[in-house]
Image 1 (cartoon, rainbow, N blue to C red):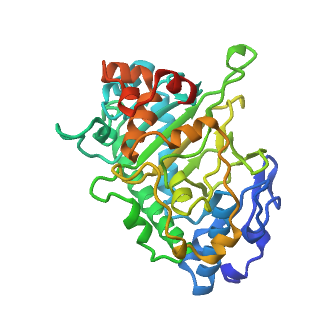
Image 2: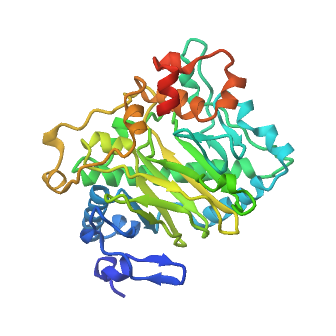
Length: 401
């Protein structure tokens, strides 16, 4: 049997269209910024022979430089855990609305819990999805700490009587996804010729891990019956910010799109047995813009079926700077310097967002939570003006956030 390194590019890099697996992508070493499909990288190569590991790191480096998105197969999240998570996601969103309201984000000062369809706003647009947000089970802020410390805190689960085993399943998945994300971050460090734990030591708060786990349900929308939703998206175009890496699992319905350098939207077609991994804004920051955080969106679901996805977001420590300083130029490998493409800031709103807040916590809590969930904010923090806290005028908040 040939080693992983001996397999052809066609075997190692495939995408899937609606009729099956076809050879429509290219090997990572041939990728360009005008990509038309995403590559598949094999995580088993990272644990393979020295030659296989070196090949994997080169592929990973090229993907970060040119695309910012990829499929990963043979990832560390166990298949049985992935499958059971999918089954629980369908169950939790199928609960009656009156049950879901009992663990809605309106009951959580940390904005953990269920968020109803139509109550989330991205860059001023209403997203057509319902979601469930959770993280590590941690205490909230101390009395003498600022409100943004409430970006972490206790989770808001459905009761064990209503959905037995849901909490245990989610906690197990969060641990597994965190372990997988840290392993990928170690590989990212090595693509920059750093020690495997260097980026982890730079970015992560290991005492109060503030990473987030999202579970999304995109219901089918019949635009013939509801033309008022025709211009909406499942999730409006954005980059993942403030994020280091995102690990996305999804069902086979599809809907995620990634934007290439020319501005074309490329379908990320589901491939069984893989996760989709993408660069967050903080890898772009720390590499001086060389590793690109790519714009993406989720289309309005008109498939006739419900779509489900469940991303894990690896997030920098809350007290870290809003825009992380780049590594010194002498620590950036020459290959990275010579082969980088210039990142594009496609949205005036994004440029404004990058200037908002002093640290990760302020941006994560005041903008990503309070701004995104205005109805919950009004209930949980009556009278608190997050815009004034950040020094943003109401006019700029409406225009850019």
